[in-house]
Length: 74
Image (cartoon, rainbow, N blue to C red; front, top):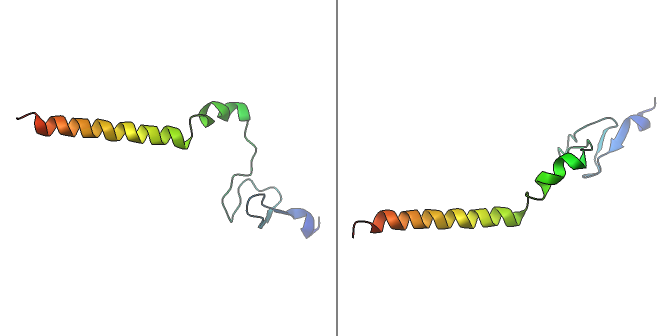
């Protein structure tokens, strides 16, 4: 085999990597194709909107608990 056939380019950072690599040594991207059916259920919950709403709910709960803790003695 020649050297040109053993080296490929990473599809994400375009750096040269070994042709059979499963992870890029430069950008650490996962180069293995995953089964879309396995990850599709979790992918719809992995959004910024869900995290933002959870953060707001958590902040409101902490605020209410703090308010009830400190105003209960009046």
